[in-house]
Image (cartoon, rainbow, N blue to C red; front, side, top):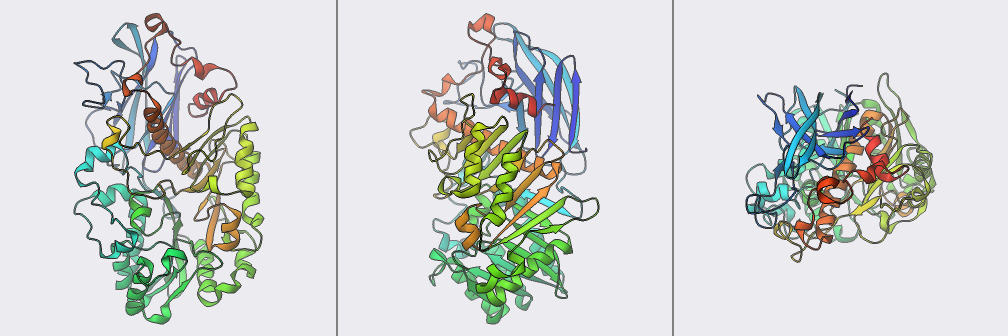
Length: 563
């Protein structure tokens, strides 16, 4: 498998997992020495002449020579401040294609107080190229780092200037110059831009659009340039309906450029919630983009979202049928063959794909297979479901029952306090988005909140990502009964460890980012979060002891990603 690389040496194990332009590094020590204080990670990017250490936000102490986070520099080389975790996600600021990343992971010890000494080291390489399956499937994520120290360090001077204060002002908003939108939108933005540019450049191609939120001016500009080669269905529910909404403004403009008959406004029973681009050549669908990413400022630049592009006529044809049915007779959609069953696409040497489209008359059609996959998982369940705390039904029931299962689980929801998944050992397997307000200590009170609204907008579930039976469920669906029976939506089940691993790493990346922020908020003072010294020096339990307690979530965490 070229999306993993592993090595074991003298009881020290390291495993690399390929994500979407990111890498998860799993580490394990069979019998940790009492003075083990963590792991340093160094990386050599393609084309780089040397290794550079990844950096830690925490240190062993904060004094005049090593300024505390509340007063100064907040990054410490992991050679001096090793990671006291058994996994780490490396998310390069500027990912490189066309070569392999080289990682050097070293056990770090502290034989004397304040003296860090290297031990066993393992070096491995892995490619982090963009496409999951060349010429067939490309998965992309937004960066979701507007509310982060990374964003503050890189773009803090233009925070509050990158998105309009009101969504309805989006189409007239002047975007700031520079690369901030490419950085924040990351691969999902790149996929959407490239998709639109390719159709625009090919005069034999036309585009079908299904849009929910639609206020990104560059996207609408390209749609308008397509003229009569565009057909569009734009949601008109709720706040999207008034004449002054961004969606109504976009529809009016596109009716002028494409012709009024080519643009429809509708909302099925509740919402037209699809976010889909379908490319056709001479009327035949050949490529499709879909996912959770709305064509909007928040969808692309603030929220955690994903997009998938299938360059496969067999997949595009299904979405073409969805569009045609909605465009001609949306009221009859739920009773049509496209909405009453799952659709299998199985191509040679490619993952098995299963698609389900809503609205349909019984939510169990789409949600029961998802719930069953969660119930049947034997190793891990990782998920990011934006509105999980607001929904019931098979998905919520299956997630609730995770607390009774002997599997590793992590989850993300956007609302705090409505749902917590607790494991038998008492550990919590779900975090929410927590923006650290002005009452929080520095460096977080200087961060930009990213505006009001949902921050975690993903809708995906990954089961047993590390096993041959791996599955990922994703799409625009909120995975709730009301949505499946009332919204225009899509859901895909992909049976493939490579793709499932990409989504698993995304879940871990966002979970760890939010968990660290939550820990900082809950700390009485930021300096209480420091790296632990060995028991012989600190007279306290070793940092790693809880990871070796049999049957716990942390033991599963240590073993799952490193072997």
